[in-house]
Amino acid sequence: VSIGVVIKGLLDEAGISYKQSGKSFITACPRCFKRDKVYIRKTDGRFVCWVCKETEGFSGAPEWVLTELLHLPVQELRRLLYGDQEYKAALYIDLNLTDFFDADDDIPVSIDVLPAVEPDPGFRELDSPAGEAGRNYLLSRGVPLEIAKEYGIKAWPAKNRIVFPCMNKGKLLGWQDRYIGPTKYFDEEAQLVVTIPKALTSYGLQKDRVLLFGDRITGDHAILTEGPFDAIKAHLCGGNVCTMGKAVSKRQLTLLRMSGIRKLYLALDPDAFEESARILIEMSSDMDIYDMRPPEKYEDIGAMPMEEVRDLMRNAQKVDRNFLFLYLKDHYDYLAS
Ligand SMILES: [Zn+2]
Image 1 (cartoon, protein in one colour):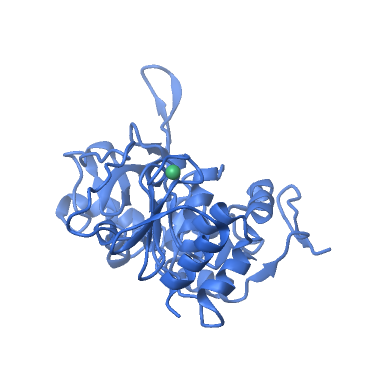
Image 2: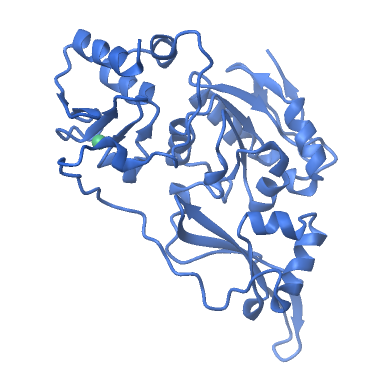
């Protein structure tokens, strides 16, 4: 039985009214309540709400729209949709939106698109002569050139910074940078110690609405880290993304959910224990959660060699809702209850 037939059966049984095009089931959105805005693709069940896609990332695997339409638990829907076969994770960025339509359909215009920006003209390639300082800085942080290029990192010699681009579905939304020199110096003239901000976010980037390196989620898991260096150190793990800050937004959790992952590895800094605990509560009914905090001798994942981060993932403990993330002064431990 194809997934489209299962979905049709579920909609019929629940008495949900819908239209059909050759490629999609079309119905009202359970979030924005707008008519004919949710398209569910018959071939694979992937769905999109043309309004909520941009504002809340509401698109992806069918269980996420069906759970809100039918008020059935996600686990039960997965059993109905996929049976016993291995659940196939799919990329939210992979959604080819034109595949929802037939040639003669009107394609809805989505609203509130995250705006793309132009890179600063001062950016330079890391492997150019102007990229030398940035290249060396990255190497000193344990990131070789080839890997840095894979993440699109640029040098910004005019500002003495390196730049982590925030790409979303191939679009540049902004960037976060790192100052690569000493961040404190004594200004003789002013007779003051001057502090230079280490990390700046480009103007207009709504960092609570995206995941840095989000395009790296290609399988059934994600590694959730705090800073760009933490994420890059999890390079060998795959699915390594970064929140760009201590707080993890609702929207970022939605993006993780919609990506179709089944396992989430929490690799936030140890002092973000409250945030980790909150994410565990919010996400554990939808996916397996693993504790991937760094061992005590490291301040964060970013301080670890890549191979050790990979091993940390392999040995990460699966945790349940009763798990307590503890953080005591400068060391931490956990208690399972
Ligand atoms: Zn909607």
